[in-house]
Length: 484
Image 1: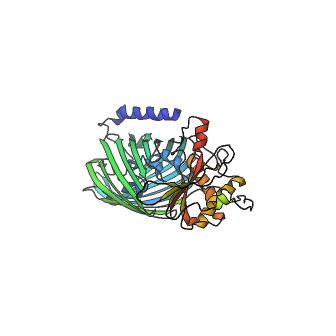
Image 2: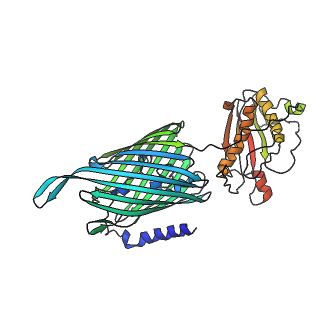
Image 3: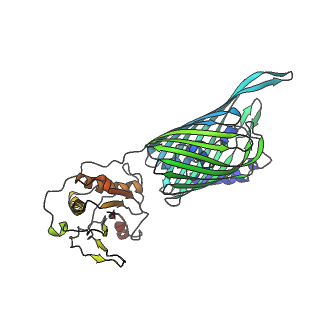
């Protein structure tokens, strides 16, 4: 928490210091204000509270901590006045709660006029290059910090300048869908050409992101050295996990390549994305009023980590099931909620005959609840004992008898944080438990397309988590019939 305290103090100091005074408008390395990636650009450049892809190194390095596996991304930007920028980034998960990132940005401007007291005599080129190293770390399941260290190199004609800076970010996951982000950008040394130095464009970015199903909503507020506060907002909707539609709006102070302000611009952005497996292609359209229109295109590749579940599931002994276990459990035309399986240390309950329970509906329906049976998991583990696979044969018999049934296997945990090599968080653990049951049903001949799985972690408790008994009840697997 010491780093968190330093981050807050830095933010307060930056907001109140003369460095943020409006009359201090002279800055250099203004290319650092250009956002990274076409996805965020299409959402109005509001991404601090989401920061869930390879370009989190720019928007909020604390978001790296929640990236699983590895990601590689590259962006081409057609900027104002025929200036082009290339961006590339790479993120790799290096621990259960830590990720490391590399980001490179190169902006090139050609054919500037060279002048002296006698007039124009030729042209020269200018370039801005950034090399950044980032690290994101979860301090707990709901809070992370990030750091982005960067080296800035700016050759211009026969002169060149080098500066160093850091970004410090924090991300608070209030709930599974709601995040708050904070990023203090461009804290560092001056950019010095010849004898005069210019400050980096210090910026404080705060954002909120909300995800619901295939919808992402985001709002960012920026306070940059010497300018008014800028507001950005955007949304993204993913269709069939393949096509992404994006739109946004932003109100900001625009400046040219020399840092001179050109006034307030308010515009609407748009973007589109295509996702095929782990490959994603994004495009963004960003107008700048009378200045020009910019275009960005990004290509990213994701490699998700494999959830390591052992395929060597022991097979139960081939013994006939009791008559009560193989009698018809579901009548055609009924909805059925299958048994809840909890992680307790008690002995499995004896199976009882199923009693139909009539529902008070306008149609003739019945709701049948199976008797509960206990499934024991070791802490942080998703494997089952052979005796418990025998209990799952009730489900196997039911699905074989009624091939029209479709089920969802739901995994749950208690509120204790899990951080192991196999399961970096409670979400992975709950999904792993559901996958264990899925694997067994497939081994017994149930088609996989009839089964869905879902991991809820500790978001749906059925008992208070303030006692060991309540936690034991919340560590469970539920099997629910969802269709016929």
